[in-house]
Length: 301
Image 1 (spheres, rainbow, N blue to C red):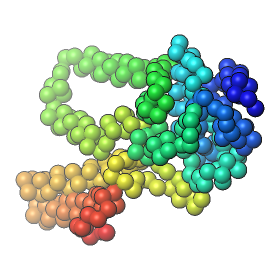
Image 2: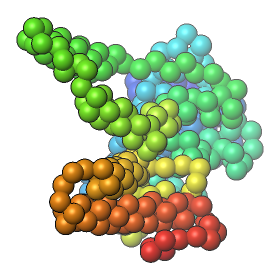
Image 3: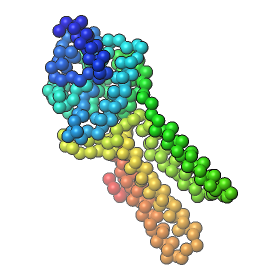
Image 4: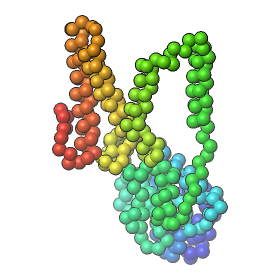
């Protein structure tokens, strides 16, 4: 195919669908074979239900947002196209590129072969559309303003929460002593601290996958093996372990300051020590698995 025919074909497909679906033949004709004066961002994925790739579906949603933002942008040109190769439609492409994991994002530049930086670091940067847009701008010099469809879930939940709080205050307007309850405020502050120290804000900014499933072995990893990234499930695990250590400290404090019988205080003390020891050991083992070469451990390696 001559260059003009390629561009015309890609523009026609893009007008119908923001993300062009490619099989082996289309990939070879429109991406691999010269001539080409356009870049192609391709997501290699496995979306069929029997593949059970939850991350692929989540990444696809963000990828569609990015592609739609570009397609309906006033700056839209034929300098760059967004495409997708599903394993069940283009397994030969996966074999051609020696690819054994999904999802994977690769930029095929207008000139030359993809370099190391043209493969998106999914595990480090996450698959949020905004992160993908920054990577696209870095590799192609095409800046895309991500426009997300309106999501009313957040405002509705906030409105519902405010309504519930307002209703409780109104019902108890004759007795507002509960607002001065130190235990209630302490629990609220503790929940906020646990959420922040577990990495929830990092998840909100980076948009990492919940977990990673190896497409070959089927093994699901909930802890990321690098210190530069994390999974959503990992933050939930860390939050639980931090809460266990905190509960252990609280029990130790109760054992030391309460007026209970000596026997009961000993039981509470032993329970507190057990919680601190076990959950701190698990936290340290997670730290060792992410920071390779860290020499120290406690109970568990």
